[in-house]
Every structure is written in structure tokens, then in C-alpha cells.
Length: 373
Image (tube, rainbow, N blue to C red):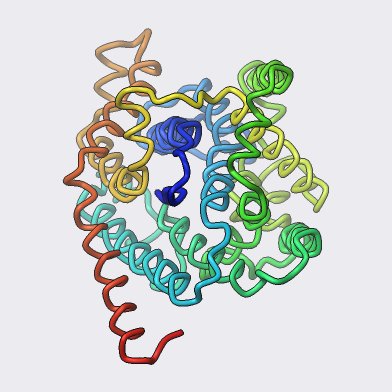
């Protein structure tokens, strides 16, 4: 969602097209989250909206790659930022936008809290300044990733990647590494961002265009789809690993799986293969509407959760299930596309542009006064 152009170079439409696909999948994932049938532990209970087993498979299918690939692409276009002032400006931008998203998320949860949630929630909704499990985690993670990569810019890539992998695998043994400061997701997903950071976007695009990569990509995606939709109970316990939030102990307690670092290593391997596979099916051509929307994913990400809360509050899922009992799952899934298209309208990006321009302007003032390098 880091909508950064590659300087004076020819724009690689591959990444804009993929970002459109990925943001649709992000919205889809949040649309179907409450409609997934919990297949492990105590079953998870009701959520107040219609549920379907197909969404359980779809959730695991999507979450295996959509955020890792988003972060990988973001890393590709943040490579080579050695100007500390620019890095600071971008880092602050993500922090400010993250805080704004946190406020918007809190307001949305309170304003659009359903009667079911009021009756079945464990307690009142509260504003968590330092943590939380909302979609804003991505913004704080991006800020951390940019800062880390700047600090490690002179380090050997293989050493950083090895250390980050070991840290990600070890973090699951510490229950204190969780939503506080979004630390768990920062640790778990940093290797994906860093892989993008050290690679060249043009070379990656050239590699995934090779015919054999495309053939293998279709095979990998097909096999993963078979397991997710044909063997859902087998792969569904991986759900808690895919979010990057949970300790091995909490996963083992909630599922029938004995979760260890090998479980996370397996999931990271699956995610890496799927990221490569999805890159392999991407098109590096300018597609009307899709390519343009793919360059505006940040604003879609910022607003979409509020739309999902609103739809649930007004009974959208229940309406579809009643009006179209045989096809409501399809119609709910397709709803992600118009949400993305509407939120790609330029006006939804104006508040974010104002924030980012204000921060850049502040940095320029600091530099002119001789207080920045």
C-alpha cells in the first residue's frame, strides 16, 4: 500500500495491477471474516452474521499471501532511501496515518456496534493507544520497517535476513510478543519486506515473466486452492499463524496442532511460494481503471474497514443470505470490488495527501533552519 513511484524510470504496471488484486483480497478478507465457520477448538461460536464453510477455506487461502506480498512490493519501492530526512518524513507519515486509522477504527466500532456484539462482547470497546488488533497495524509496521532498513542499510543482506528469520521463529515462544506496539506482526513480517527491499523491482518483474515461472505459478496456486477448499479442516489450524499475531502456546491451546517454530517456518515457506506464484500470474500492461486504482491502495486501506463495519451493522450479510440463499456467498465476495472502486476515487485520498504533504513541508523547514541533515 506504499504508493511510491520508481523515480524517472518506466513505471512497472505489474505492481500496480497486483496491488489492485491484493487490496480487493484485503477487503474480501475482512468482509468474510465473521462469516467463516470456526473449525477448531470450541468452534468459535456465533458471530451474528450468516456463516459458510467456503469462507473458512477462502480466509486461509487469502491470508497466506496477501499481506506478505503487499509488504514485499512495498519493500521493492523503498529501496535505496539513504537520505535520513526523507526516511524520517515517511516514517512519521505512516505513524500519523496509523494513529488516524486507530481513531477511525475506534469510532467505527463504537458507532456501528451490532446488537449481537453488545450482548456477547467481553467488555466495552476501548481505545488502545499502544496496541490493538486493528487494520492500522500495517502503518506502524511500515514505519518500523523503513526505520530498521535505514539503520541496517550498510549491513550484509544475508546476515539481516538470517537474523530476522531466526527472530521471527523464536518470537512465537514469547507470549509477551503480541499486539502491544504491533510487535509480533513487525517481527513476523519483516523478512518479507526486507526481501523486497534488497531486490530490484525490474529484475523481479523480468524473472516472473518467464514462461516456466508462470506455469509453476499456476500449479502452486492450484495446489494451495485444493488444500484450502478441498481439505479445509487440514489447513484451517494454520489460520492463527497466518495473522502473525499469536504465540505458539495460544495456537496450540486453541487448536489440535502442536505449534512450534517448525509450524511458523512451514507457513512462511508457503507464503513465500505463493507470493512468487501470484507475482508470476501478474500482467505488466496498463489495464484501464485497474492499474490506476492499484496506485491508490493506501486510501482504500485507510477507509475500507469502516465500510465493512457499516455493512455488518445494517445487516448486509443477513440480507444477502435471505434474498439469495443459494448464491449469497458469491455476492458477498463480489462486494469487495465496488468497495475498492469507490474508495479509489480521488477525494478519499485528499486527507491522506494533506497529512503527508504537511509532514514533508515540516521536514523542509527543519532542513532550511539547519537542524536536519
